[in-house]
Image 1 (cartoon, rainbow over the protein chains, first blue to last red):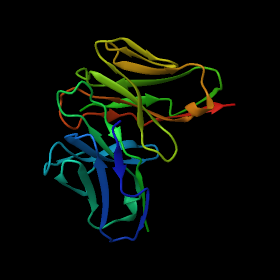
Image 2: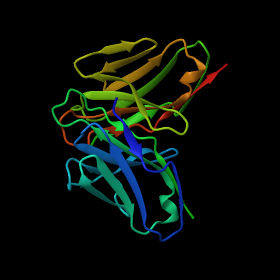
Image 3: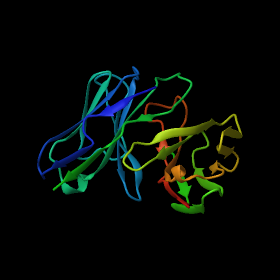
Image 4: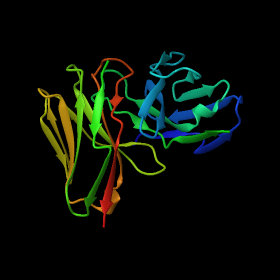
Length: 115
Length: 114
């Protein structure tokens, strides 16, 4: 089974802090994603990466950056956390192009609270 | 880009009854439609998916139907049980269309009444 792990289940940070959310997948997937999930808004794509050192903006990239130095690891960075970034953050990975499925496999999520 | 609408936002059914969640999509090029279940405190998990060359797919108590002409697809859960209570998300994508893949609906909170 695909396993996607996230470094923390719960985080509490203060406004202005730099925050790192880590995600690791064990299935050698090229594609990795970061979403945030808010009540009534569903899942919104922040950034994705289709290869090491490659990144693409999603629908709501403002206030975030990402890093992909190794294939299995995709990090989301909040350079200066703000209260409106309080949310559930979900990481996902997906098999490479040409695979028989487009299914994304999700991690358990990190609930971030910014005070 | 793709837009996925999901209804209803909340659905309450009696245990043992059936539940139906409906989604519509806008991009006629979409050809892959997965459904995810998210339990409290967990990430979404795939429960069933369908490709555009198939009109219906079934797995035990759950089934998905697809109408490409009308651009809508539905999740059907029969003989509902308490453990079916969760938030369900539909999604659509164009296979091979890029790494950004899936567009999600906003979710349906399914409540199974004992």
